[in-house]
Amino acid sequence: MKELSTWGPEVDAEASVGELIVKAGADFSGLPAVRDVGRGLTLTYAQLLGQVEAQAGRLLAAGVGAGDHVVVAVPRSVEEIVAVLAVLSVGAVYVPVDGTLPAARLTSMLDRVRPKAVIGDFASARAVVRAAPAPCAPVQPITVTDGPATGSARVWAHRDPGDIAYITFTSGSTGVPKAVRIPHRGVVRLVRGAGYLRTGPGERILRLAPLSFDASTLEIFCALATGATVEVYPDGPVSPGELAAFLREAGVTVAFLTAGLFRVVAGEAIEGFAGVRQVFTGGDVVPADAVRALLARHPGLTVVSAYGPTENTTFSTVHPMTSPAEVETPVPIGRPIAGTSALVLGEDGEPVGPGRTGELCLGGSGLAVDYLGAPEETARAFVVPGGQRERFYRTGDLVHWDTSGRLHFDGRLDRQVKVRGYRIELAEIEDRLGRREEVRDVAVVVVGADAGSKRLLAAVVADSADGLVARLRDELRRELPHYMVPPLWVVTDRLPYTSNGKVDVAELERRVTAPASDHEPALPHGEREFEDVIAGVWTEVLGTADFGVRDPFFEVGGDSLLAGRVHARLRTKLPGHPLRIVDIFQYPTVQELAEHLRGANR
Image (cartoon, rainbow, N blue to C red; front, side):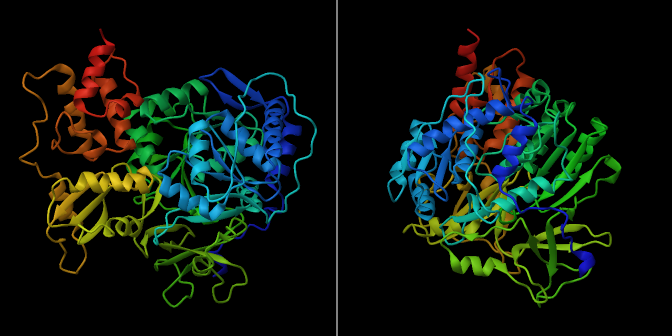
């Protein structure tokens, strides 16, 4: 089995994140560390550390010390990066949290981590303070300027490699989010073993992923520990056209996009990648056709299929592709990166050879410490397989080796899914719906053929459908993150099953897209230009005309990725008319968006 495992003994992960950042600050003090082109703001490494010192002073004044948990609920910005580094500089643990999550969700998360403080804007900090089970001090984020560095030479708090750097959450099948504790050595291994990544002075790395999504560790630390520049994308929804324009304007050279967003941008705004040298994509099955199209349009670009669970610090395996001819279908998830070991175990717990499917287990210096406060779940997930001396994480992913030592994804052992890059336990959503008295049975499934079109569909068995979907949707919104609320619904008297006893997903999808006779017409009497164009684009993107002019986009099957497609196509079909991606969210119906466009053109 040795030839089917990759260890990285040459990667010295026995350091803290602070050691890497402080060294980079000394080595690259005058180079640009962080840029926000929209604000015309650039911080050198020296200026960045000065801003970090100022933010750290506020944390120390709030009583934060080594090992304390600090929630970071700052929108994507230069201030967000300063907040993260400030938490680490005082020896604390940063906990990325979206302050707009439903109160019940926030409470269940914060009950696990019991934060000492929260850095966030007024609304987010107030939400966290109210949801926290114990006193939690609100700390205001500093307003970053590009003035001279004013920080003192205070030494960052010492942290051992095994100390916790950050805690992030994943969906839990029991209904309680799992708090994954990542040690400093996990992040250091990601940086020092980054032979798969173009980084260092002169490289400009896109900062796009939500802080709670572990790709943010790559974007922030692989840049700032090596002398590269972090290019911060403005906070808010992502539009293919606006992202493409940003890539060009900021001169981004390295970017990570989830597989779904990658497909959308490659399909709607492929010219935006003209100056990019390396694109990472993952979080779902990588679309081979989109990779081929991108490589054909931009010779010299490298696309990297990147795979890795949160429990092994962001990336575990990578597969680079440089020409359309070498892109396979399906795209492999590749070989383990340095500092990582991979085992493929059969049902008997023994390693299997090439071509045979088994469960992927990952080891090495990237492993999480545990699930905080969940010893039983930790014991099930982190094991020492027979014949091994170190811990491995059981991913639940089914894979196989090929004869050249690359891994290929074959499916899941359980019902965990990835939608728009988010890891979701379908059982958690079913559990929430099943608690409702009017719901006799429920199944939540994924429909859509590829990463860019995957959506959740909830099928509920109930005696009456009157107002039921609206009530259930509203209740889920109060309890779960937005990406766990199904946009598609079916109410039925019984669930359909295939001949082998599984829920018939195709039949459910057929029912949800069937035209409904009591729906208002897609267009009102006397068709108008904007309504006609908007409804036509909705029909193209959603794959159905089963909606009315007053139906919200996000309640008839839309999601943030599809909103990006709508925005890109409307800009093409309505040239000269001002339309921002946020308009799709602020004016979510055909009627409202049409009225907005008419008003903007008066």
